[in-house]
Amino acid sequence: MESKSAVQALAALAQDSRLAVYRLLVEAGPEGLPATAIAERLGIPANTLSFHLKTLSQADLLSAQPQGRFIYYSANFARMNALVAFLTDNCCGGRPCTPAALVSRRQKPGASA
Image (cartoon, rainbow, N blue to C red; front, side, top):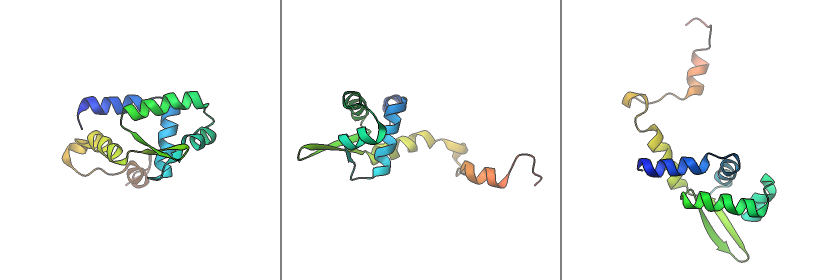
């Protein structure tokens, strides 16, 4: 992933409602959800949701699949993984990164080693 693409994806996610939509779609898995279900679960009006879905689609973070009268939206997991890989590409000076949860369990503040 190029830096310009990463910035576009991060900019699309840098808004509360869009981030909530994206996280809901990630949780829903590859099957996705119809726009009506997204609006109901998150309490977002249809016209506002449409705007957010368009922004996420333009950033290639989700895809839309018409099914009958509904459009199902799902997270673009390949794009998500590429973004995460881009963000962690130079992590920890080339050494494997230790998840923060593991570090905090091993080294609690004020605890002696």
